[in-house]
Image 1 (spheres, rainbow, N blue to C red):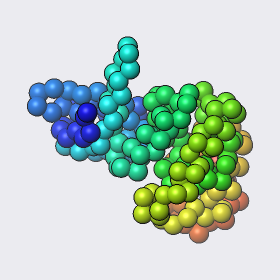
Image 2 (image 1 turned 135 degrees about the horizontal axis):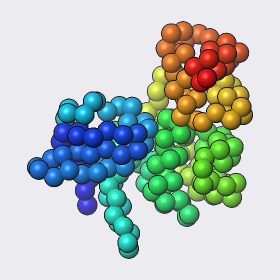
Image 3 (image 1 turned 120 degrees about the horizontal axis):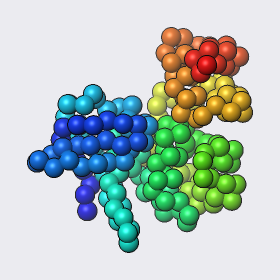
Image 4 (image 1 turned 90 degrees about the horizontal axis):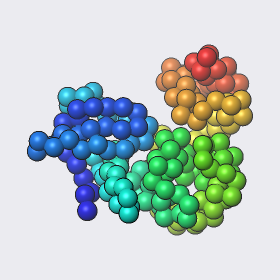
Amino acid sequence: MIVTIRGILTRKMPEEIVVETSGLGYACRISINTYDQLPKPGKEVSLLTYFHVMENSQALFAFANETERELFKMLIGVSGIGPKTAIVLLSAVSPDEFKRRLIAGEVNMLTALPGIGPKTARRIIVELKDKFVKLSADDLPREDSDVKPEVSDAYDALLALGFQMKNIRNAIAKVRNGDKDLGAEELIKQALAELR
């Protein structure tokens, strides 16, 4: 089993990277969260991996941290969720936000993703909710602290307007970087400007 990889990042794309080590180049599937944490090509990287083998295919998935890898393993353990779908889910929101929304039973967050219908969304929530509730606070690190209500409200409003999750997350992060004390209304207004 391949559990880690360290080498030179030779190619970097939002969905896939190539890491060269010992003269071999390994193509690794990644999430947007991992992509955001990677250096520019030509630099050394050290990543956690999961090697997925099926009857007619093999794929190597890379993760910036253990939290994301554990979420990935949990997701592919759900009936009907394959590794490609799991990576799409992990790309939608940060691991901490994903956990919060799953515990809250937010079916809409999952059904907004391509390939996830209401039945599959409910199955994910039913099968994983208890696992998340049982985890201690140390198992899934917090980002700043719990997500503020105004951030959550802004996120939900922008999602309802039809924007993609990863774009919303990036826009809100960019706006909050300048001023973390914005109310929901102002956050939505400034995030909309970033999204257009």
